[in-house]
Length: 291
Length: 306
Image 1 (tube, chains in turn blue, red):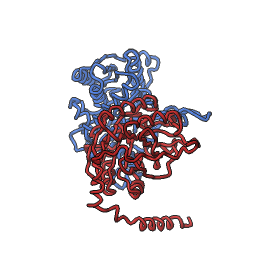
Image 2 (tube, chains in turn cyan, yellow):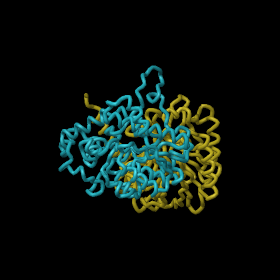
Image 3 (cartoon, chains in turn yellow, cyan):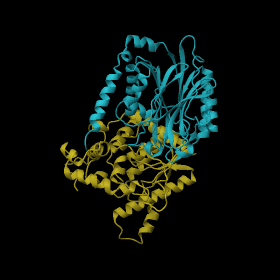
Image 4 (tube, one colour):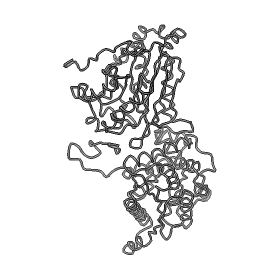
C-alpha cells in the first residue's frame, strides 16, 4: 500500500502529541525495569546479558536499561546484519554500543542464510525473514552459553499482541523488560533514558529486507494501533464500544483478528493432556521457584 | 493445649507498655525468597536482631514473608501446621519484641490459609486467616488457599489490635468490623504488586493503597500500620511504600522507595484517645441501624424468586 498522505513516511514518535492514557512517567518506569533486570538476572545466578542490537529503538532501549542495571561490562550486544540490511542500522547500533561502552560482536548471517536458501531458491521474503530471525536467535543462545549470560528480549507489547514477530526467533528470550510497553511508550522511555534521537525518530523497521517498514506492512500507524490496543486490551472495550468512540470498523476487525490469530505465539506448545498433573495446566510453579 | 490448636494463649498485658505511652514500631519492607522458607526464616532472625538493637517493640513483616507470594503449587510444600516444630522457631522470634509475620498455615483438616500471625513473649497470640482471596487479573489465590471466615481483634501489650491481609482492606466492611471492636491499631501486612503506569509520580496501586490506609486511619480514628514487600517475582514488582499512619490520618512514617528497609516510627498511643475526643465518630456510629439496614438489604436481595 502507498504511504502517501497517510503520514507514514514521517515517523511520529515524538513529534506529535501522545495519546494521554499512554503517557508514562519515564523515571518511574525506568526504575522498575532496571530493578527488574538486576533482580531477575542475578537471582538465578547470572551477572550478564546478551542481546541482539539492530539499531532500532526497542533493542537500543533494552541495551540502555541493561547497562544501567548490570554495568557496561556485563552487557554483550550482537550486531547480526544480513547483506540486504540497511547499512544505516549497523551504524546506529554501533553508535549505541559506543555511547554505552558495552561489549559487541558483529556476526554477519549472510553465509549461512544463503547456503540454506541455495536449496530453496523459491522461498519468499517472509520465509527468509523468519529464517534470519531464527538464525539470530540461534547465535544469541550460543553466545549466551559461551559468555554465561541470559538472553534479554526486546519485543514490545504492540508487537507481541499483533504477533508481529517470529516465534522462536526475535520473540525468544529468557527475560523481557519491555514486553508490557506499547511502541508509543517505548519511544517516550527511550527518549528519556538517552537513546539517540535519530534512533527514536526513525521509521520502525524489522529490516528483514531493503526498505521494509513496520507501519507500511501493518497498514496502520503505531500510534493508532496503540490507542486501539489500549482500549481493547487494557480497558476491555467491546467492538461495539470501540466503534462508538470513533474507531473504523475495518481497522478494529483487522487488529482483533491479528491479536486472536497470533495467540499461539504467546503460549508454550499445546500439550495433549493425559495425566492428572500436566505441565502448565495443573503442574503450576513460578519461574522464580526457590529464588 | 492438646487438640486446642485454634485457642491462642492470651496476651500478657502490660509486659511491654512503656510508662510514657509510646510505642516503637518497625515495618520490615523485605524481599522474601520465593518458596525458600529456611532462608526466609533466617532473614527474619536477622531483621529481629536488628530491630531489637534499634529498640523496636512491635515488628511487622509483610504478607507471606516466610514464603514469598506467587507460590502457586508451592503452597502445600511451604505450609506449616500451627502445632509443629517450625512454630516453636517462630515463637522464639518474639522473645524480646512483638512480631507479626506471614506464612502459609495448614489446618488439621488440610486446608491451607494465607495467614498473618502475631507473636508476643515467645507465644502465638493471634492468627488472622486472609478472608478476601483475590482471584482475578494477575491473582489466583482462591485456586490455592482456603478463605478465612472472621475478623477478630485481640489484646496486645499496646492496646487492642486487628490484622487484615492485603486484599482484605479493599473491602470496607473488614476494617469497619475491627473498628467496632474498638481497635487502637490495624496492622496490614501486604504483598501488593505494582501496576498502572501513568504520568503520576507513583504507580496506580500505590495511590490506591495510600488512599485506603489514610481513609481507614482517619475515619476509624485508629493507627494504621501498612507493611508491603519489595522485590520481583516472575516479572511482577512489589512497590514497597510501607507506611505508618496516625488516627488523624497523618502519615507518621513512609518508605518512599521499593528498596529493602526497616521503617521506624514512634507512636504516641494517647493519640487515639485525643483523636476520638476531637472526632467522636466511633461514639456516634449507629451500629444497630447499620445491622438493621444490612439485614433488610440482604432480605431484599435473597427473597427474589429467580
